[in-house]
Image (cartoon, rainbow, N blue to C red):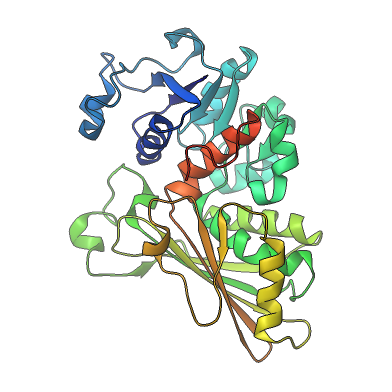
Length: 338
């Protein structure tokens, strides 16, 4: 039985993570770290965990663990997570980090987009980007995994087969994405206040969203060449889910069935990617509460349109984190997720 902990246990993604781990046959939650006084029981923070997880929350250091965990998930925000992760690594605890703090090898790129000096440059070289469909072999031996962002996961899975086979132009890719409100986290803002976001859909951070450089870096790595990509996120009045509509230009004319066959071959052995056929298009409800990414492909002239759909809290966060944990620990990849 693998002993696991969570630092930052009050986030939406933490609740989703606890629900998954509670049904995981090879994992036991032994430690919850929070930035709150008084060691509250986790069920007082999340009443839905009553009689499911009777555990007091403690602090955010290895010394606060009631018993040593084999692996810790950090769901702390960017710029905060890297302040608390190093002592766990130094104590021999594997870490899966939900923040962006270890996603970029180039600290200057991180500092530009996150507006803070990186305080743990020493651990950057050991961090592995946690997209299993790209980096499974590296994740197997990792001590520190940088769990991808939700939008980058959705976009990258839609583009990987095309850029790997160099079937599209790399200088004109558009990602138009819609996300549920839980993607903004638990901290209330005016934009996520119910009267503001209900019965409305709105673009935000156009050209300036922090996930844009992450998408570009991930897709460029797969393409082995620099990619030019435009990303526009939208907030939609639903709790969870992301639907990305991705537009690219085919280098040469290809029939829709041929492009779809490329996707089917590429993801044939992937347990959490489903390629739709014909006119069957994915919907956020189809992937809700699952670790699946559903994909569909349409071709209109020389334009290829990819529909990519995930649950932002599962494949876009906690489910993918558990998928990474399973790989790191040599467990079946689907354990606790299907």
